[in-house]
Amino acid sequence: MTAGIHEVFRGSNFFSNAGVGKINKNVNLEFHALLHLNHQEEMLMIIGILKEIKTEENRVCMTPAGVEVLVHNGHTVLVEKEAGTGSGFGDPLYKKSGAKIIDGPEKIYENAEMIMHVKEPMPLEYPLIKEGQIIFTYLHLAASPKLTKALMKSGAICIAYETIQKANGSLPLLTPMSEVAGRMAVQEGAKYLEMSHGGHGVLLGGVPGVEPGTVLIIGGGVVGVNAAKMACGLGAKVYLVDSSLDRLRYLSDIMPGNCFLMMSSTPTIRELVAKADVIIGAVLIPGAKAPKLVTREMLPLMKKGAVMVDVAIDQGGCFETSKPTSHSKPVYTVDGIVHYCVSNMPGALARTSTMALTNATLPYALEIAEKGWRTAVMENPEIRSGANIIRGKVTYRGVAEAFGLEYTEAAEAASLDAG
Ligand SMILES: NC(=O)c1ccc[n+]([C@@H]2O[C@H](COP(=O)([O-])OP(=O)(O)OC[C@H]3O[C@@H](n4cnc5c(N)ncnc54)[C@H](O)[C@@H]3O)[C@@H](O)[C@H]2O)c1
Image (cartoon, rainbow, N blue to C red; front, side):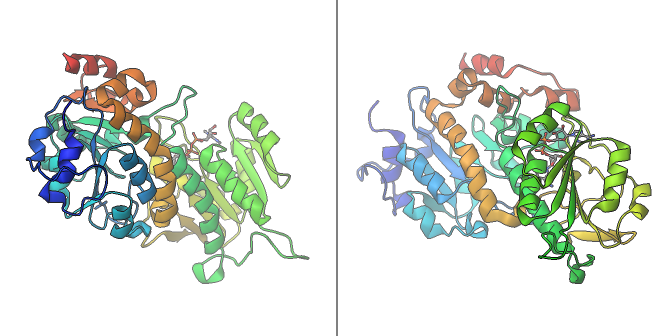
């Protein structure tokens, strides 16, 4: 191959501030024409990092450190102006990492081969998505027929963070957000126990001579364990309840002595809610709505001013009295019990969440950029499980079933595309 697209791209007037890589000042071509080069041969990619536009979303999909790694690997990274501001990463940091700062999403959609986001594209972005472009972000398509239809129509290659799955069944791009939400749940519980916030004024760790507070965590997965670690670290008395005996056995080996592991059942939960100052809902039944494990009839058993944090609210919530709230109005009270039910908790801790997300997404972004989407999908089963739509074909079974659409295996769609 002669001068690579990136060399040309960096030398164009469009990026007069170009500072990375070899600059070819004599070549000033329309780079979108170059995007049609055969990227099976071209191993470098133009990656677009967009500013989030969804309400209350301050995260950004890539830190300046992540951008630096991509640039170091020869890729060109276009970052939308002020994309990282909400997470405390200003444009100068991205510039220093070798990114090009671009005003508005239009030019990024026009020129990038892979678009990265945190949240799903919003309706005003639908017409900007180009055929063959890779969209790599959280998509949650089964919840949105409108987005599914728009992405099918676009002809894009849509790889969803949330369905990338390891051989052991874990979801590596959901895990960091569960870690943030679990740890944050204890922080929120402790905060709303304060009397000025409607709580009954118990300090979770207690003080010498005064017993600590009690935390009940229902569900001992990623959220539950992270919540338990925080609550135990504060010195609270922690009950962690799960329905899997194997999971409880494993947790009993790793959790500290102030964490008491219990098998989940209605009588156990009924008994424990009466003792708890903070109750954290952290159950998940994959592909199903969360079961209502704390019922309305249990509320009178609880201490007035206790706090319930329903992290599972994004799956409908595991408390019967839960309803989704937002960061601007996170709590409400039912029968004297404070309810915190924010469905996008990590959004409030944008800086930590952004860094945790980048740690998890970067290896996949690098692999897709280096191999091209087709080879990455064919070779890596984790990336293959992330492919939800390939050039109009639905390649994730759950999405096809949700909307009665035809399902095509991702490997088949990728090989068909290769011709
Ligand atoms: N609100 C937010 O911002 C936010 C952020 C991240 C995750 N979440 C949600 O938190 C929930 C938990 O996520 P996770 O990553 O920990 O899932 P996970 O799969 O790691 O853990 C779920 C646990 O629930 C247990 N469980 C299932 N049924 C149960 C029952 N009847 N009683 C007790 N335990 C039961 C499972 O055995 C498992 O250990 C999910 O609904 C997830 O979507 C919400």
